[in-house]
Image (cartoon, rainbow, N blue to C red):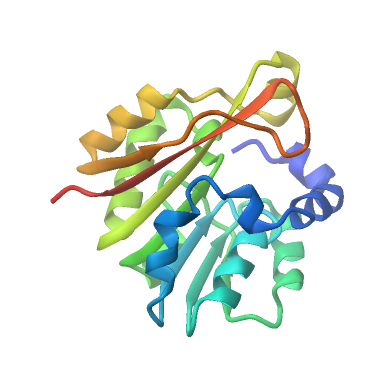
Length: 207
């Protein structure tokens, strides 16, 4: 994953990420997660955790939650740890497609949130990443994948991003034995960038 942009702008980005409320940012798919949050001891994995906003929400809202946050950018990881230092969140500097560090210590997560990460994976790594996620998901678990669509080629280059299509993600998920529950409609960017829209895909293990 290209990280220099995020290392150089970590503090500014952390403040921005933390300024948005989880419930508003993720309203289109929160209904799928709410029933899972009612059980104590929920195991939650946040990949592309940024500065810890989403991991913080699950740690605070779920009784005895076991939360793992993964952020490969060193500066953002440190800022996220500081932001959530009073909460039971385990932080890792790790990344897809393999998640070597996480897989050594954890398995069978109830909820896995993957925020914009597939926008940074080459197509050759996508299938491996999806298989990794499938192997970390509990039999009744929920996988949430957020995609960023961007029409600004310069912005894509600066961030080292690629556009990842919904059809591609559905294809590699099916090959990883995952069933799609929902594909949200494209949503406007919370920062007001007209060149950016977001979509979320939700999966469960095939029965």
